[in-house]
Length: 61
Image (cartoon, rainbow, N blue to C red; front, top):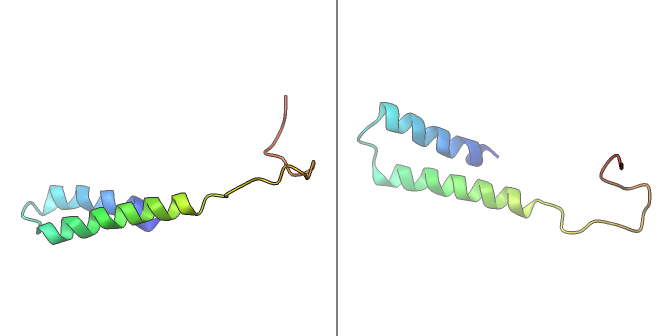
């Protein structure tokens, strides 16, 4: 989660306050963003247990 939000935020701040940022720093920040996004995607639930009638996603209309 930190990489997902911190990577783009650090890139924005670096663009504003550090115009001569080295390429390796940009690469590391982009890699942190991608790793955070992949980590969140992989932590999503794989399947849902539909057999339990009391286990639902919320109110039904």
